[in-house]
Image (cartoon, rainbow, N blue to C red; front, side, top):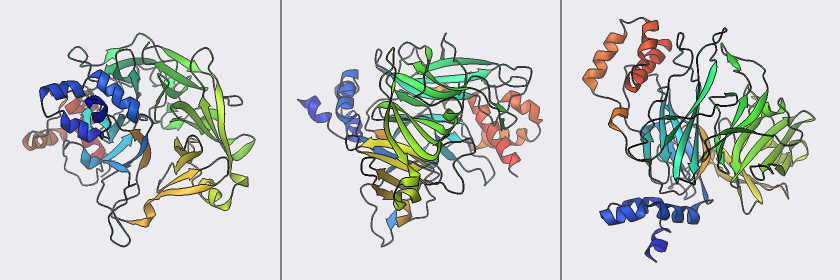
Length: 455
């Protein structure tokens, strides 16, 4: 009876109860209780926003913000990092994964620090540094040849971080080989570092697109060959790659009917209603149409179902103003200008937002064609800029494990100042090699090079 009552409390209240005694901490941190909590709160999605720096909100009349104001993750909510001596280095949180049982992975740019975050409890843990990526003889500090995914293993009842990285060098100076490693969150003393996986990725994974976890697998939009070369995009076959979190094997997922490799360039992967979703726009036969596909199940009977189709050209003026084309036309690489956040009201409505400058969240009803304004940041008077991006999460009491001492970055002012003076005397090619020494050096040198290039 006590477990049933405690499992209905907010996540922060449960975490606070863990500090009452060792017995309470053990009971409320057990795998059985965490699963019970997830069974009650899983699927009840909440909105999360990412900001450069979040401040207090008031409306135009000076009143307090409404209860529907989404929770914020900002750069100021992370521990203080190594501080360098220039003013124009803005720290920005970047979302790398969709939520997985309440957890997300966020990168602090430009430092490249990776954090697993539990928005419900405010807990954060820095991930250890993975294996070296890129070409060893010509390593570019500003280019990441790695992509992270976050999944949950139902067998060991632990979250796993999956990292696909590319190393080596071919004749054209591009990474030649793809590898994979796994890090188990809260896995105990035996799982404090990245563990290599025998299975190899089936292709090149784009390092700057959000990865998705659904139906026991982590998914990526991938290319058969490395498609970035000297800042330009090369055409290559695209496909959907997936990684089984329990089996730790790779496979590919066939696209929906009528979606080929070229069409995949204008699609994004996300999670809707607990299933993998492929959200497309600008089909070859209809440039102003959005299709929402849902994966029925993964396995031998893998198939897709068309959840809804939004024809912008024939929609109402209000729908056209929000979903219609703008001057930017989406990202240069064909990423949709509109992204779905969640399916709500038993599948009757879809929450949508803009991919760039997301200042509104709208609920679209496919059956009636109506669209409703859920949240509009322009109606709030604040010093904050427009949110960087929106995502969804669910209440979670999952623990992230203890931060190992070797992963804590030294931030003492004297040592930082001394190291900064030394960096001015070292050639750039030597600095690139010194970035491989440890995570602390890698972060400090990356910050130094970023500041020097922006002067």
